Length: 314
Image (cartoon, rainbow, N blue to C red; front, side, top):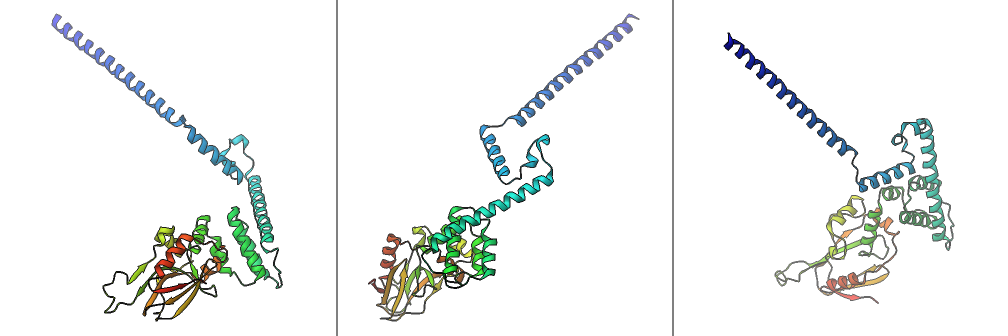
């Protein structure tokens, strides 16, 4: 009898102990979960000063274009219809300001020229539609040069050239300027070339000559192959390298380099120039770039050409 009571007592004690241990474990788990929740909560609310600055910059940008409505607290939000009207009004004001700035710049470029012929109204309407979104001052200058060129000589810039230029970034425009600073032009200024080398057709006497081919390293002057790819993507140059016809001894060619005359006379037979050629659109837009001679490249180019040509710059 006593042994039976004793057994029931120990079973009861073990159950109580087990229940207590389970309570302790549950309390620990609960405490752990609350700590985890607190940590997660802290992660959500923690914000570095840099993140805060980015958020502030983003808010200012959104406000400038009147698209910050959904970012504001609900009690500060105006009706979406009102926000739509406000955004359209600010957009039109921006466009008007942009085109007026371009008109002011245009006047300064063509003030000294007579505008004899009437400008095509369709061309001018297309010009306004393409340029009114341009707010960068440098790009506005270039758009002003386009208009000034068209006013003084109608037909200077085609619709297609305007479309290509609209899609160009400030980086693309600087890349075009870099290419123009290294390019030579034909006398009519329609053919523009980036000389990449000069070579003599191989023969029995020169086959093993190390000087048979001279390369012009354009990347040394800031125009690498990736830049050529970017120019080709904008349809400004042909990426495929071209060659001139074989030039005979005594044959003379004439070019210009950023306002400087370049006359070359072949002193050996079967010589050819290698170059990247500007597309017609690239040649049109190249007129926007002012002549800017790179003295280092000018000497370098003459040195490379002098292997097969007599240089005459008079």
